[in-house]
Amino acid sequence: MLDWQDIQIFLEVARSQRLTDAARRLGLDHSTLSRRTRRFEQKLNTQLFERSTHGYYLTEAGQQLLAHAEEMARHAIEAGESLTDKNHQIGGQIRLGVTEGFGTWVIAPLLSAFCARHPGVTLDLLALPRVVNLSRHEADLAITVERPVSPGLVISRLCDYRLRLYGSRDYLARHGTPQHLPELARHRLIGYVDDLIFSEQLSYLEPLLDPAVVGHPGPHFAMRSTSVTTQHAATLHGAGLAVLPCFMAETSESLVKVLDDEVEVMRQFWITARQEQRRLARVRLLWDFLREALEANRAFLMGEARELMVPAIEA
Image (cartoon, rainbow, N blue to C red; front, side, top):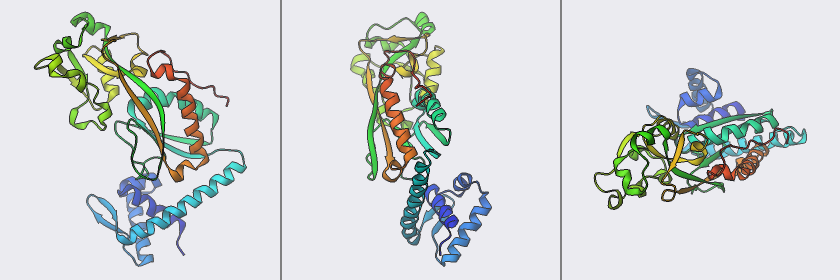
């Protein structure tokens, strides 16, 4: 008979593909996890992983076991959720992946109310300048700027948001305020590192910098960064002009919209979960909470209000 602890270890190594990552998530040291994995293979008399310097990859036998292990894990979670529901107390862990700027400026403040309402839930908020991979079980829920296309996912449009071109009062006092797009040619810009953009939805500046409009050689990039939070900080301190989400820029009196009639970018956020995770009570609860909270903050996301409205703690 298979030991449930061995199955949990196998699943974490299969999902992480790196022993160090799996050990950290399981709360085990690297050497112990390595021994437990080899002992499990010996017990089954089957090699489950191909080991290399790049990580642990499932063999054909490992792939066969993975399907059964995933099913066992799903039943275990659903059993726990069923008992939790009967006690009217939502508990457990939820890992939410979200883009860095949105996670920092909007989601984290909103979640303060969710955490207060549900003290039995532990939230892991992964606010990253990249897309969280649900298929590798990096998170239970993901909020992305592109609509995912992977099969087996539950996907819903979460909210719209607006971006505009901003500059600090200090920068505009020193360099002047452009009145038309061609005038960007003599300004300093702040944007993403082109070859490290994780989504085409973040290529805001490209259509604004058409050589036919701004001429050659075009604007100078004073700074480029993979982090929109870094771009915001650089803009705030007068390094140049940047296209920023209104939910970040409008909270500061020091930032001013530039070319308001000519520069307006609209984007969406999507919320996604694997089907088996979406059925969990705590995940459904967070899913619905986020949808309601963001609907109530539509004006803030569109740059029509300066303050985020955090839901009341009392549900």
